[in-house]
Length: 101
Image (tube, rainbow, N blue to C red):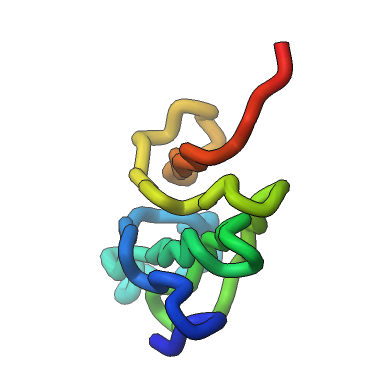
């Protein structure tokens, strides 16, 4: 997997899970997990996490960090379906993000 930019640390955090609706997947392929790959230093260290379909390898979704230095994707983890929508949930760390309040 090619990185988005030089030295963006693509692949420094990776997880797998069922991130697409399993009803759209043929039964013989349903055991193949999707995967999330982080690039926490991409885009002036705002960070990027990309979700890929485990069957086709196609990009499902891109999640971009909200501000330079937030380092979105420094850590990623699959959670069981806490939203009860039938798909796994994704927990993404952004240690450089500042929260007002």
